[in-house]
Structures are given as structure tokens and as C-alpha cells.
Length: 387
Image (cartoon, rainbow, N blue to C red; front, side, top):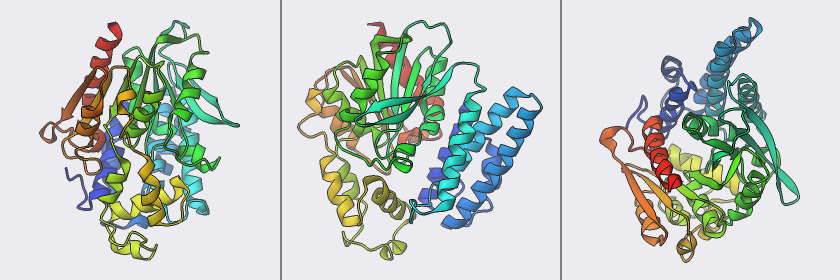
């Protein structure tokens, strides 16, 4: 699905940013006027133009807040948070030492935190005990009644942030009566940027402490905890569910069987490709490698590809016991064919939902079709939890 740009990666990321309009996280006109200032494949212009839009929209929110316009402030700050995240997306040459990347990331977190204080429902920042430190999270509650409700434990994937998690999942869950406990795990968001914690294949090491924490909360129905993971999180959630058996259900958004297979298909040529050599490959491949060097904590493309070998459900998929929904995008450019692989390997109660290109849901993780995938996934969950 081409959206504004010919460059496949730019097209997808623009669609991703625009898709959050479903939950007041974007305005189509703002997306269009930003993107028309960005030449094809120009990552510096991408960052600069999205940052300028984010700053302009944040100013709208700050002015509205000062004047006591709560709804206007909340909506503008939500959009600004999404745009700051988008501005930072391609800044992966040296994110550890990139002051502008750090500024954009901090601004995305701050604008979201300020928007969350204006929500009409409780949205609590939390720190979840994890090994000898903590993981950052948000507890989003349907209301302040304290009544136990079904609760989604949610995490993103290869490049998600905790703040994006609200737009990507929590907003739709809350409307349907689900609490959400979202978190940044190893390799994600501020757990990576602020704490230096890198990805690990044994994702149950992250999810089990989150479930432990959830069970201390009076608002959480202990018998109706659902785990959902997005993108690379489709592997991570499956891996966790194979070892964490207090889950009532699991949703793989979308299904991933073998992460190494996806990296192998990047067509890097020389597996030890240098940073200079990355200039010759596609935007998508270059970003995937540079982001991986940072998030996996490795020094070369060869090490990155090697590190992904541990990220497989081979030999452990049959350990998942809870009902599991596997989602698939017909035109997925990252994990094509893998949802069927993991679905076939499951021995638990299971279903596979395929989102077609001609209905607007065919892109990776159904970007641009938030309402559609939320409708199908939560309608399925309603039935599973009712039984």
C-alpha cells in the first residue's frame, strides 16, 4: 500500500503515524503537510520536518492547557507525542550519542505524560520490579471504581515505545472494558535508552514479573489476564506464553515463528556489511540493521544476524496452553508467511485471522486499520474470556 511516498519505509512510517488519528494521535492534514516537505529517502529532512510539526502542535497544547481547555490540550499533546516519536525514528546512526535523538525521545515521553494527566480515566505511570532494576510502564484503567476487570498486559516490538502503546492498543481496549498494563521491556523505549537494557530472547523473564505485578493490583481480574505483543512482539509474546501459564489468552499481533529467518531475508549480501556499506541498501534494510545494533547491543550486522538465531519458537510453541489468536497481514513486508508457521505449530486452542490488502488491513501489523484489527481481536477475546 503506497501512502504519500514511493520509498517503502517512508510510506509505511507515514501510514503508521497517520493511523493513530483513530484515537486522536494524529491529524491527517498535519501528516500530509509534514510529508510534502520531505524528499524521498531524505532521513534528515524527515526528522527535521516531523520535529517542527511536533513542536508547533505541542505549542497548541500548551496554550490550550494554560487557558483551561483540557480536551484541546490533551488531543494536541497526544499528537505531538506521536510526531516526536516519528521524528526520531530514522535517527539510528548513533542514538546513544545523538543529542537530538535524546531530545525528541524525551519530548515524546513528556508530551504523552502531560496528556495522560488530562485523560478522563486513570492513567498511572508505574515502575515494575525486574531483576535488580525496574521496567517503565503505564496502568490504564477503565474507571476509578476499583472493580476487577479483564486486563491486557501489552508490549510492542522492535521499535515501539511505551507512549505509542496507548495509541496502538490501550485506547481501543479501554473502550471495550479492558484495563491495560503496558510496559517497555528489554530493548524497548526508555528501558533501552535510559537504562541500557537490550533485547533478550527469553521474554518470559520480562513478562512473568509484569504478571506478578499485575496480580498485586486490586483492579486486575486474576483469571482474565491477556498478553498481547506487536510486531517483533509477536515472537516475544509467544515465547513468554510458552513459559508463563497464568494467562487466560494470548494475541500475536502478528504471528512470528523465527526472527532469524526474517533477518536472513533482508538480503544484506555480505553479512558483515560495514556502516558505510549500509548507504547502498534500501532505507528499510539500513534502518533495520542500525536499529538492531542499538537494541540488541551488538557491533556489526553479522553479529546482529547471528544474535537473532535464538529468537525462534521451534521446539517450544507446543508449550503454549492458553487460547491464542494469531493475526496475519496479507502484504506483510517483514514476517510474511510466519503467522501460518506459528499457528501450525500451536497445540493449544487457536485461531488465525488474515487481514486482506483490499480491505485496508494488509500492511504489517495492520497499520492504517486500527479500528478493524481492534474490532476483530477484542471481539474474539470477549468470546474466549466469557467461556
